[in-house]
Structure formats: structure tokens, C-alpha cells
Length: 328
Image 1 (cartoon, one colour):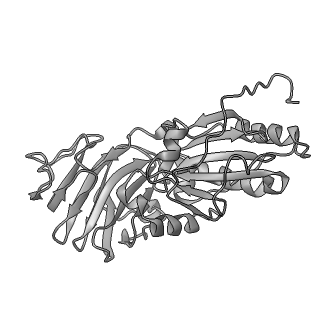
Image 2 (image 1 turned 60 degrees about the vertical axis):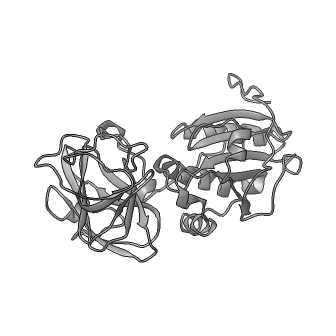
């Protein structure tokens, strides 16, 4: 029985995982084969900052309750085209210490079977295959773990009242400073971008030499140098191209990768100076870093007061593809 006052209605049956592109860390699983187990299904895509900040809890739940009958299943449904590459997915998940089964859902078959619309999205499934709870987005970790405990207790596991997990995240996995977060996620391809500030606007799918304005307004961004703006990314054609963004948040992340495969050195600054102690986990104190693979890079983590500041990144070689800024 569930504890008094906690209501977990049946929300429907766990859909099949048919249509999956591949499975990682496991042979294919089915709802029928999972009967008797409590399942947490976690929709993700590996560059999603919101999912990354929830991942420490999902990993911890898997480690804590796996021996009690919990099966954690990641469902990787891509946002960007490079997130469809199996080698990219496998490498990213290994770096993130994801050891539980992961469905590769490149065609959105499982996403659509769940009628899902969010990254991250958690679905909690009881031992007879019924979805009993869900949560979209970050947060609600305490209640989510209590739900896991309740569903496991229902099948005889001795976890009721156990201490909840504690996590010690680092890098992009650290929770956002929500009170100081005043800049939204901003895409850099022409399909979804906004607040572009370079004079003359964007030229779609064609090389153009851009200049940054004398002053960039709050939450606006600009290019300088020779770039091609494409649907989902903007790609540098010549050395020493820059992206500038006036932001108001503790953290600056940038989803980016080498367009042609070769690594690209870069340098970042904040208000025209090296970041020093405010360097993110992918940058040295002098602002230097290297673009090696397509993923999310943490470029700034401010230690002091948060205010409106100018971030700039300069790529020293051509071939950098930039997709989206996220903040924390």
C-alpha cells in the first residue's frame, strides 16, 4: 500500500519500445519482459542542459535501487542532427557515466508512443506495467524518489522510509542559480534564433562577413568574421571569427562542435578580459579551450555577483559550428 495521502493513479500502460534505432548498455527490453520490475523511463538528449542537471539524481537512483528491482531506461531522442550519430551518443553517455540501458530513438518512435513533448521527462512505471507518475523538466527530485520507494515497496522491497540520495554534481550538472538566471536559451541557426544584433541581419545558407555592433543590448548576440548561418547551426568559414552575447546569468554554456572533424582552438573573454576564476569547466583561466567533439561546453561559471556582462568567444581556426547558448 502507498503511504496515506499519496495518490498514484494509473496513467496508462508502458508503451513498447518498438521503432528504436538501437539499444546501448542492454539487449532490447520490452514491457512484457519488465513485468515484476519498477521502471523509470527518462527522455533525454545529450546536449540538453535541463536533462544534464537532472542526471545526477537519475544516476543515483539507479545505483541505489537497482538491486531492489528498479530498472532505469534512458530514451535518447535527438534535438540536433549530430545527436543522431551512434558514436557521438555512445561517447557522450560514457563520459556522463550512464551505465543503465538506453534506447536510441532517432526517429521519435518511442517519443511519439509516449506522446512526450519534453526533455527531460520522467515516467514511473509499476511492476505490472502501468505508468503511475510523471514529471517534466528539472526538480521534484524528492517526490520522484519517494514514488520509486513506494512502487518498490508495493512489490516487497524493503526501501520504505530509506534516506533519500544525496548528489554532488560538477560542471554543467550543477543546478542553475534560478534567482540570478535572466537570459533564456538562444539558438544560433536561422530556424529558431532571435535577438541577432549584427548590422544588416543574417544571410541564410550563404557566406557573409559579419560585424558586431558598437554595443550589444541585453540578451542579444552578434557575429564578427566570415560565417555561414544555416538552419540549425552557424559555421565559421575563416579564422578568427567571434560570437558575442550580452547575458545575465551565473553560467554560460554553448552547444558546438567541429564542422569538418578537425579540432578548433578557441578563446573566451568576459567584459573583454580572460575569465580567470570565472572560467567554466571546459576553459582554462586564461580563456583558452579546444573544440574537439560536438557537445555542450561550459565556458563561464561566475563566482561573484551576477550582473549584465558581455561574453565573447573567438575561434582561431575555421570549421567551428555553433548551435545554441544555454545559461544557468
